[in-house]
Amino acid sequence: MSFSCKNYDYNDDKCLMLKQECIPGRPGCVLEGRIALSETLIERIKEIEHKKGSGSPKKK
Ligand code: SF4
Image (cartoon, rainbow, N blue to C red):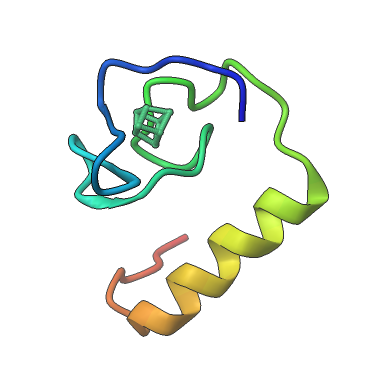
């Protein structure tokens, strides 16, 4: 990746703010809504969310 983010922990390869894997543009990321996510990243986020289980209630 060729970017610099103040929240990125180079030692741990994680996001210090979200305390999770750094996926630029993911929900909660400073870049959320500012960049277009690739299909690969979207799939990656879904995969991570799925692993976490259905923790977030979804209301319409
Ligand atoms: S997830 Fe976003 S806020 Fe966190 S380190 Fe990566 S680019 Fe920065």
